[in-house]
Length: 201
Length: 272
Image (cartoon, rainbow over all chains, first blue to last red):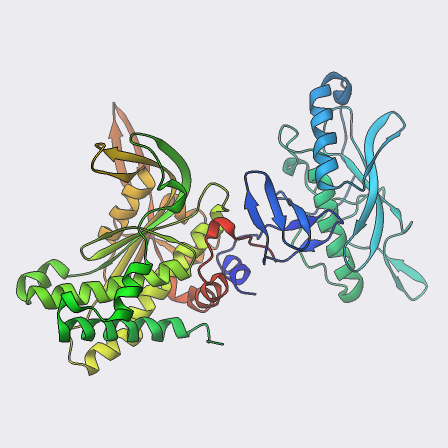
């Protein structure tokens, strides 16, 4: 805790970087260039865009044309970005919604996640497929982690964090890896290690 | 392995050793170590040193001016050699702190250092943090260990002050085919210099843009003379500036500089 400690003292939220496997990295060794960020041991890494964990009701979407059909260029760009940042993820389609599924290995646990776009290009929804239930056993009951939507989907960011012109599935996978890293910490300590907003998606 | 706080002691001892070596032998016979230290500080931003004449490049930068106070009066009253020796000794050590903190010396001007942190790919928050850290450590080292050493050695004390700001600057090589240098143009650079003028001894004053990166607002206080008013073609805008409580950041600044250890902030990643 050195440079991060100084940043923290200044009140700054320190950015994080996600490896292709989905692990959150510490500060040392990551090098920035015009091609992005990389780490000497972990290879290419993705910078986590600013976000806040939320929860509460699932967000509403509006009816619109299907963006991944009307904007093929953006969809192709996302495919290229995903192939570079998270090559283990594969495309999927669920109930007519385009998305991705793949593994995230936080270093403390391995998860399979599904990320589905909304036709209106709002914040994609994220679901953990494996393990099937999130939480920690508390006696006979299952204690749920914070920052879940009522549907059980995980809330990786607020709606205002999502900037469709700048963000894509790579952003959401990175947010999800960060959420899962925080979740594995919570499983051990019952303390969510990052500040977040309660019930205010 | 050195302790993070050692940089303060090194600063003070470095100034004294450097000064005494110059004072004893005259400026023409620098000790080898002092000369090496001076030469080790290359002036200018490494990314923009190769610009052609009139070519320009742009990036966001944190810029600081760290100056000695009262040096004009001192240069009036004291023997020129002694004033020059002390300026060289102090500025060299400030330059070393800037380098250790991942910054670049952009200019050495008489009684002050102009330094920058950042580049094309750096994180503004890191640039700002390391700029503040370097200023804090330089001010603390000057106020603490150096003051004691100079007093013990019977040398007139040196006082420091600093001004800083953040924002877009343009690097442009200006001059002729025979004589040119890379000039740094931009409001951030201009206002950092202005902040240094607003600062009293041992103060760090920062412009609005840099101050906005200090999210813990208890660390900054609006300066008595803030804001600066600008008028242009009937429009009026103001630009605030703040005093930074740098002493509250000292412990973290020392450890951060120890960690950075001379790597450019453009290559640093601030994470957990």
